[in-house]
Length: 146
Image 1 (cartoon, one colour):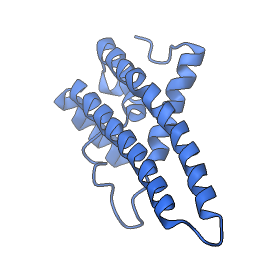
Image 2: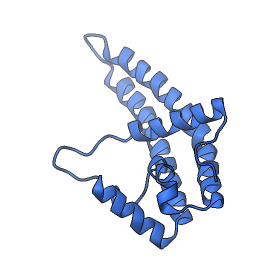
Image 3: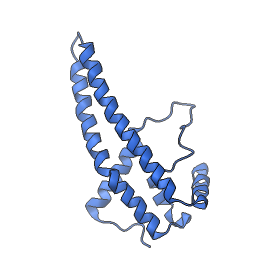
Image 4: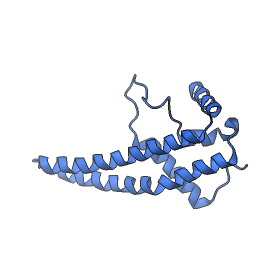
């Protein structure tokens, strides 16, 4: 099994997706733990430790398929979010702000973020479900070690 093999543009797109996964969710506030961090496993961590976890080739392939399945949504929504945030900046720039328009724009942004977060959690749940109990325990140990 060759974990590191891949195709140029496809590998770049997967890396971009993994970066987006990490940057869309705000970090926990100082002193707070991530409420879901102990229960789900980011795909980059699972794939980075594929050998240690003794992932089968079918598991690696399934994880990659799951990532590729949600990738278009993440990339599209990331672009949409940037555009909608730009619109909000324009609405907030004048000395006198149209509150109704600004809040309506904020609602559009929050809906896009909700869609992304829902897709993120769905991806993480599907990845967890692809792992056996022993693999999950091993991941927890690896995460606890840092």
